[in-house]
Structure formats: structure tokens, C-alpha cells
Length: 165
Image 1 (spheres, rainbow, N blue to C red):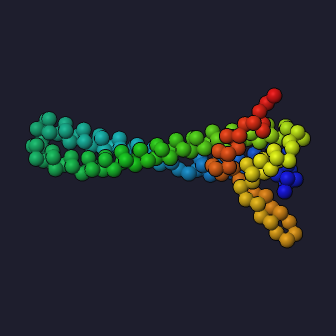
Image 2: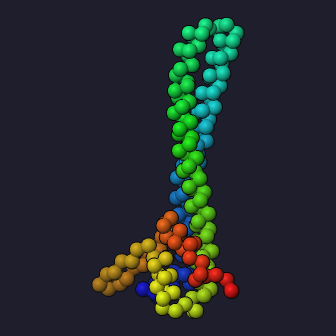
Image 3: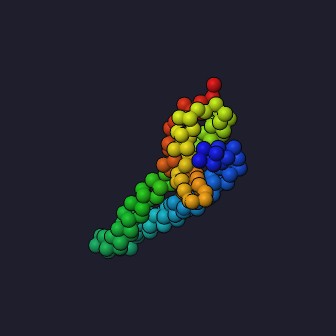
């Protein structure tokens, strides 16, 4: 099993490909583009509210008419403000995960440089950190190294193995 993990670490292009795939998945998640769309809708609602208030100020509508006309945009505005809060949190999580992908790559690079110096316990720790799933078959062992958030968090939280001297 160590040889499988070592092989993955010795071939940074395989890690780079996995990270690129995960990066594309995160970036296409849509939180940022959806946030832009929702912000645009919210801006149009605010403009509509302003037009209604302007109509009231110019005495085109009375107070009752204004209250009636402005109630629906205000309800929509509340909904979209909540949506913006949710999407901002998702976008923030996406940015954090992209930062973690970079840290994962740096950690893998550092570990690769010290592969020959790792003892059995350190090798076991590297396997636990990098292997998100180990599939054992009768004729083979498949080590799956997917940079999921949990794995990335574990790898980047354990600097002692790959600290530069």
C-alpha cells in the first residue's frame, strides 16, 4: 500500500490532475455566478422600490397605493437578501476550499521531497492522510487519493512531516 501512495506522491502530475479536477468542480459549483445573478435581481428590486417612493413623493400615488405597490417588492427583497447571505457563505467556502487545494499541493510537494526519510510510523501517517479510500481486491490494492475537504484539512493540519528544515 505504501508503494501505491509513494507512487502517487512521486508523480506530481497525478496529484495536479486530481487537484485541477477538484478545482474545476468547485469553480463550476455556481455559488459565485448565482450570487451575481441574485445581486442583479436585488438591485432591480431596489430600483423598483425607489420608483414607487418617487411616485409617492411626486403625488402620483397616495399613501395606501404606495403601501400596496411596495409590499410585494419588499417581500421579494427579504427573500433575496436571505439568498445572498446563503450564497456568500457558499462562495466563501469555495474560496477557502480553493486555498486548501493549494495547501494540499504544497504539502504533497514537501512530503515528496522527504519520502526517503520517512520511517514506518510516518509512512502510515502519510497513508492515513492522503488515502481517502483503500480498495482491497483479491489480485490488487487500489489507493484512492481524492482531495476532499476532510483529507485536505488533515494534510494541511499536519506540518511536522513536511516542514522544511
